[in-house]
Length: 403
Image 1 (cartoon, rainbow, N blue to C red):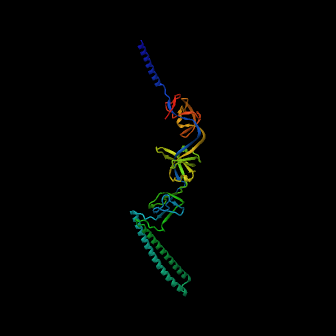
Image 2: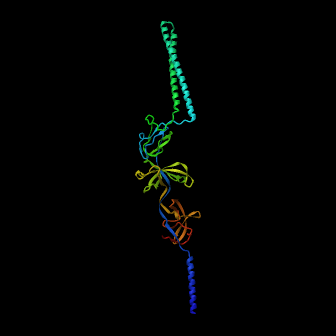
Image 3: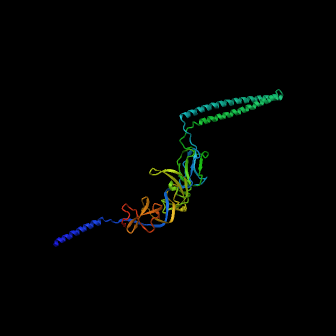
């Protein structure tokens, strides 16, 4: 009898133990979560993007004439003075090659000019002969006039013929010189180009001087070569007058106001630099993003407000990151952005009450990607859940995650 009772008690004990194990195993366990508190303090909202530095006024010096550019001796970074520093020198170019048609036309022009010169010489000899006759005739007329054998009118007519002969000779000689010039001009078209550098002569050397004072920023042409008029040779500017250009998306640019403070980072220094928006350009442009998407962007121009000694290492065309402040408040109720989620078209958080999660709808204001302004729903000092997962529902038991 005692043995049967013992077995019965032992079986009941084992059954109760197994049942307790399964009950404990299937009981809901607290969900480990990260927690944070609702705080009150200053908050700012900024729009950030990449930008680059540039000299405020960049002057591109171009070739004033078509010519043979001598090697530019200036180096990038050299200091130049307005109106005195020679930055480039140009010589006349060699003649160009003639194709077969142009050469034949030039040779025909030479033959025509030679014929015209021969004609002018013949006309000049004819004018000389007529002048000699007019001079002899006038000499005889003067003698006859003294003896009274011819009238005064006849003498004057003879003198007029002499003057006309002199003028005709001058005309013939001028025509001959014109023909000689035309022949020289026709022969010049057949001058062949040479291999050597044009002869350097101060009479035909064109010197280009710096239009403004500053430093050489970039050499656009360095080696000797023939350049047409208007070819850009180099850029000059004053690195002390530096500004930043930030191309923002147009939807962000409309939120930026003139005079807004700017934090400049990732420029190479240990501390962020300070700037201020001088201009939001009124003209937008299309830019293709790295993903191949067309974006409408607007340039925002920023001036440094820190002393030049702090950003003196920056130069023309350096890359920087800039964050432009568009809103700021000193006393704002705020929560981390990772605590927010959408619930029935509204924003909500899980508030920790005791050890339970309580879903609470909130009204938010400004956001900056890190924190969000809370207008209503929670109060400073309350604890909320960070980054809630799908395991967290209203009323679920919570436990603070430990490292």
